[in-house]
Length: 118
Image 1 (cartoon, rainbow, N blue to C red):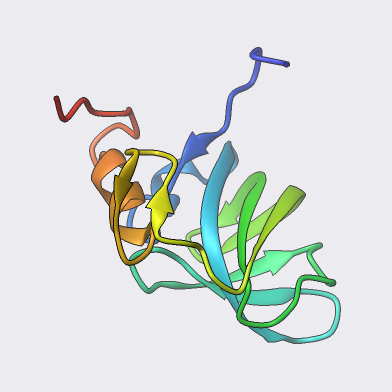
Image 2 (cartoon, one colour):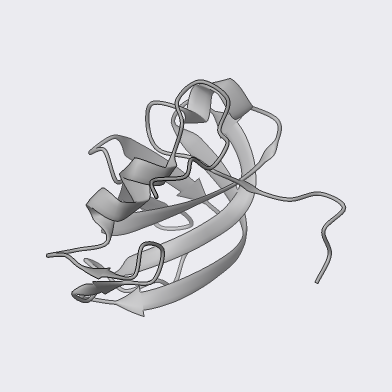
């Protein structure tokens, strides 16, 4: 695994702080406009996912790429989690309706670092 340029987890609010940097996020695909997809971030912001053209609508995907603006990511890698993100959140190992809230708890708006909730 290459750790020389890690991707920071972002949400809609924090994406603007990382323009030009490698980021990662979980989004729900809501629309396709041909070459790109439109997705909804965990905090309900709408993003353009440039270079992502084949993900199924309404599926949840993790994207890794470069933040091109406060509303777009140039996607380099992506993983399809399917139409249901499940009830078990791998990030916090607890039962939740979706992983959405678990991810939100780990994103610090201030510096993007992971917080401990022990």
